[in-house]
Length: 638
Image 1 (cartoon, rainbow, N blue to C red):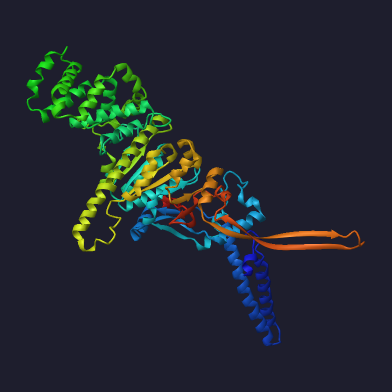
Image 2 (tube, one colour):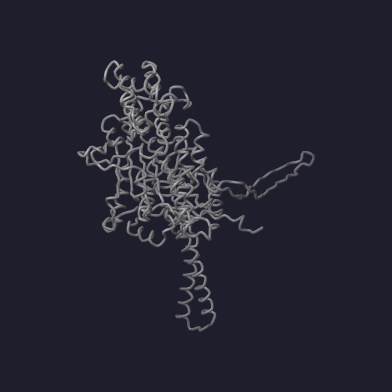
């Protein structure tokens, strides 16, 4: 076995090479002086002086190397990078994502960390330093600083999405800033969902758009700033009425999601949405709330008229008798007359499930109906109250409202950059409801891209290259989408799990940022379900995290290796039958232990802007994040 496995050199030891270098330098100077001042011209002076010079160079190189290593161990300053420099990097490598500067974390670094833990456990705890000193343990990155280079991962490897973990102020926003800028520079559609409403992320996206000459492509949504916010319709994208009903009914508080109140509310919503579609009216949250609150009479009348016009041309003459028998001409009495006419004449020849559903709601006992929809009304109220109603239920006929209207499908189709602030710090309940609606809508868009846009591309591929059908279709037919969810625990749900499962096949990559693993578990109610969310995130970027559970979860997902250490033991013995006989034994044994490549406690003492990343199916890297600054700001800093 190689002797290297037994060798351990403390990187923090004094640089003793300084002394030997100085000694050989002094010897060289003495030999040179003696050769100059002495009358003796002996080759021995020259030979010994040459030997001293050689040793001076050898030991000097060792001292210089040790000096550089300890300089790195003391910490590396923050690296600044202009946005134009990042643009140039993207232009050179369109198919990779730049994460920062770092090196591969190998068994050698793991071994050194293991030995440091045995030699000096204080090196793996928070340092006792002044408030303005360097935060974290700088030696973690310093041990591999000599091998530092740009860290880039192929875009294709991010189809499995990215998990970004880090405590407050550890550098998540700076990492997201880098990812956002690169996505915009590549011409991708970018969506940023920010429950808290971090102004820094919005400004980062806006700056990236300006630098690319696309300021009009920036879409801003924030409930706290309705006057400047775009209007986004979360019910715009769907294939069936049941999708929209499920999208809203899933917001109703329920332990199982299938209790009678939720099921009844879902049925009511489905009937209303199908009725609106029958009269070619776009379902909106405000319309649905109006019908849930006041009843479906108006919709029953319009839906019956539209259906009768299509299937019974003479119905207006035939229905007059029913209208005369009605008690009045208001919507309720007309709806009752139409329902009787439908059951008597139309149902036999042209039955309609839509009309029958609406008529059933109309005839349902009002008191019981209100009781069954008592949990639905607050949900619709949250999404339509105040200025939020105009933002989520845009009225295209209102020409006085100049705020733009869009939806996720259009944002992706046009390659725009959308920032969605949900203002959860002011109103967490409403923010969670809005986020759930957006996730459901995005899931529908992802499904459409997967089912239809991919198929269109495939058909065109067959037409153009029919002779090469066995060749795999390029996965880059669709416009790539980068979807960033900050503080993702605020929005985690079954819909998010579904989006994570489906998005990869529709060219949508998610970057999910959170502070702790416990945030997910607390939101979904169990650690098992939280692992379902995190299990869909194949790439992990981990900044400093001080939560023990998160440290353990991350460490167990990293590869494992074998670390070695030497154990010493001493023993003495004295025999009672032989006076004066005494024995002493020293034992030295090397042992191997399986350990994660990164120990959990190492994750708790990372400095700001430093991270570990597991990417590309297992590659483990240690890196640091550059701060993006404009060229003018960099000149001022210099």
